[in-house]
Structure formats: C-alpha cells, structure tokens
Amino acid sequence: MPNLTILAVFISSFAGGQASPVLEDHVDLIEVNHHYDKHGLLVMDQVIFYEWCPVRSRYRVRDWRPLKSFTQVPTKDFRTGKYSTIWKDGRNYRRITADQYRETWTTYDPELVDSLQSPKQYRKTLTKPRK
Image (cartoon, rainbow, N blue to C red; front, side):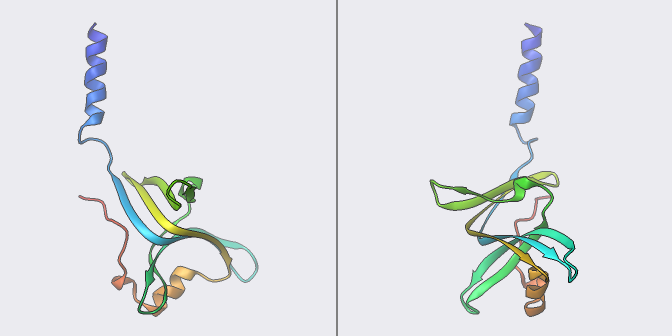
C-alpha cells in the first residue's frame, strides 16, 4: 500500500504546474528549406514560418528554426486540412499549425533575403516562453 501512495504523489507532481508548457502559434505557411552553396554542398536545413502580408501581396518571414529533428517537419491533419509540427524547443514544447506547407531546395537563404527587405526587429516572432 505505501508504494501506491508514493506512486500517487509522483504522478500528481507531474500533473501540476511543473510540466513544461506547450507554446502554440498559427502561421500561414511553413517551409522546410534546404540551403546549398554554389558548389552544391548543404549549408543548412531550416524551418521557416511565414505570414501573409496583404500590403505587399507576399509571404513575410515571421520566424525560423534550424531543422534538427524530423519531428519539426509538418504533417497534414486530414480532418482539419491544416499542417502541424511539434517539437521540444528548449525547456518547452512548441506546436505550430499552418494552412500551407512547402519544401524547397535553394542556393540562397530565403530568411536572409526576407530580412534584407524588412528588418528583423519588425517581425512578429513566435511566442516567447514565459520566464
């Protein structure tokens, strides 16, 4: 019987405020980009999150992350028609949904090109963890 008490206390400690929160965002487009140099060597794999800008009639980068795990590659939820990705981001889990998804292979960095057109300090970034 004492083992059940210890187990109950152990389980309840994870059910409270000690669990890592899930940071959730919705974007218009998620892009998995494979950036290569002029010699065809991989520079980096990255996940770029975009929102539609009606003023410029184009997607603008909202934020990006290096692609470190296949869990960051979005999957389609056929019930909702949306794409989603979830992964551990520091001490938190991050879940991002999008209306569209694309995968690209480029010899330039799309995030860098976007930052040249609009400074990064004006971007609406993904949700920041609470301190």
